[in-house]
Image (cartoon, rainbow, N blue to C red; front, top):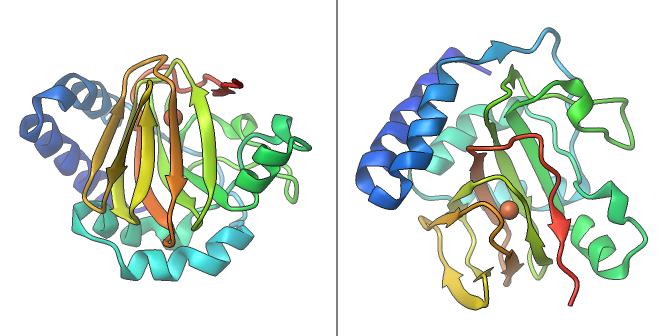
Amino acid sequence: MAESFLKALSAFVGTEGIRDRKLTQAMGLLSGALTRLTPADEESARISQPVVDRHLNDALSAGVGTPVDLIRSVVGSVSWIVPYPEYAGEPDMDAMRASYAFAPLIAAGKDSFKDDAVSAVSGPYLSDEVFVGLVLQGPNCDYPSHVHKSEEVFWVASGTADWQRGDDWRVEEPGGVIHHASGVRHATVTRHEPLLMLFAWVTDPHCTPVVVRH
Ligand SMILES: [Fe+2]
């Protein structure tokens, strides 16, 4: 991952913290962490996933704003991972996992993510403070309600989707920014387009999300 990406990301994070006062504290945490990254020792093999092969190009073509510029500048050198292996065999999560992948950019060490096909995957930069990456959620995909300790921000590069926060549902479009405080229940249901996002967990980067069953 080029130094130029980190510079561009830092600049973007700085402007986001000024643009939206609700993001100021989160962007302050992220900005600080970006000055304390360690490059990963070795490059992971690049891994793709079926949802990426099927939808990434369309999602990139439809992208808007600085987030898609940032994504375009690194997407050729990332590995994609399907989350929630511990939920395999549960029908709703199997459906979600067939159409969802994330790519770590700044993350904890290699042992953080295990992929079925390859032994382990890391992001190109290591941090114990934040977790930053890309997400691709395919069309007509229901990512059920879940919670995690991490405070989370998503920047939507492309794709209109229905979003839950707490008990409320709303629509978020490309250019949208979604902020979840620690422990807030949230869900994402895509429509007819893939959803491509940049995300940051600005606290508790090691935590494991838990799906909320009703
Ligand atoms: Fe989340």
